[in-house]
Length: 342
Image 1: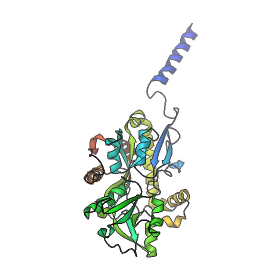
Image 2: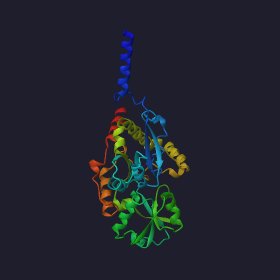
Image 3: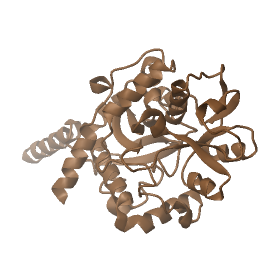
């Protein structure tokens, strides 16, 4: 009887471990799969951040990551609404549309890239040097290449045109073109102006055949160009695993942006992009976008960009980002953990 009583007690104890929250360590639970949308490399970094297992403490233990590529920020709204991704690389207008149109429970959780901060790079909008286009008003009757209507670069272009009293369809025509195809479209005169990303921006300028008509900073000042946005329910349902994920995420970004790792980091990205490393030497220098050292997004800049987008008529109404659509607890906890370990 004593043996039976002891067996029953052991069974009860094991059952308590199974049903009690936190009773089983994350190492013994199935890792949470995190599906993350992205659109641009090397800017977003998301597809390569988890390629250095030695700097990741929790990958494969409490979480795994599946990066999923999209043409731009706005197509990720549909994917998140359909439950196909858990996090997305959004621009400010896309966040507003996700909330007001798609009614998503979307939370800004981390920085990805910021534009025009201090001496750091600002997105370039280029024309052919022989186009006769020397100022924005020379774009009347011309064609403009945009990667996706409502994207961060699309909003910046429209803001610059608005500054010059120009409107879409009345004064110019917008044509959706994937980022990699924009330089060829400009060269073939199928569009007259478009967003050209690094490293192509510097490469085209070096030929003398192209020039920058304006930058995103000219249009909007320093801005939070792209940021990581998560489904609110997903955050709530997987909070502990996501605390681990964000610690690793921030550690990975800090490793890639550390000058002492520059050559190796560039090589990893070059291999992913199937480009020679020497074409990506600008990465993580002042010729690149600014990334916050602890991935804390500039919420004030997001709000300002949304306000501009509403003024441009790109969104039916605005939103108050803070506190309704932001959760910085994950990157703040990541910062505390990392600083405590140093």
